[in-house]
Length: 168
Image 1 (spheres, rainbow, N blue to C red):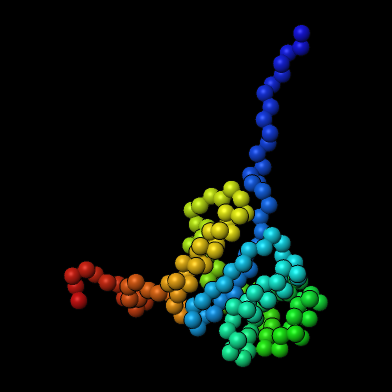
Image 2: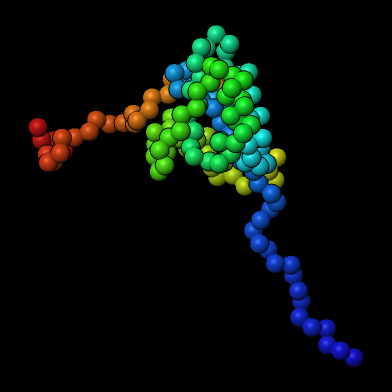
C-alpha cells in the first residue's frame, strides 16, 4: 500500500477575478460628477464614455473641454471621428508627469475614499455598484470644487514664533 502523501491545497494568488476601469467626468464649477465602469481601457470604451458624457452635459453648453492624459486609447481613430462629429468638444492633453493639472485628479481621491476605503469586494460588479453609490452621494451633496485650496481647521501660525499656552 502506498502512503497517502501530503495534503494539497490550491494556491491562493490573491486575485478574486477580473477587474476593470472607472471612467469619470467632472464639472468643477458645479461639483457634478459622472462615472461609468468598463472592463477594458480601449478606444471603443472611451468613445462610448464620451457619448454618455455628451448626453450628460447640457445642450446649451457651447464648449466642452476634455482634459486628458496621454493614454493611447485617447488618440484612436474613433476618438478623432468623435471630435469631428461633435464640434463643441475640444481635447486638451496635459503634459506628461503633470497629473496635478487635471482638475479631476483630486476628486478621484475623494471618490476612492467614499467608495473603496476600508471595504473588501468579491467581484467587479460590487466595485461598480460602490462607485455608482458614491457618485450619487457626491452629486446629492455637491458643491463647487475649489482646486488647490486645502481646508484648514485651525489658523496657521507664523513661522519662527512659538506659542506658549497662557502667555500673550
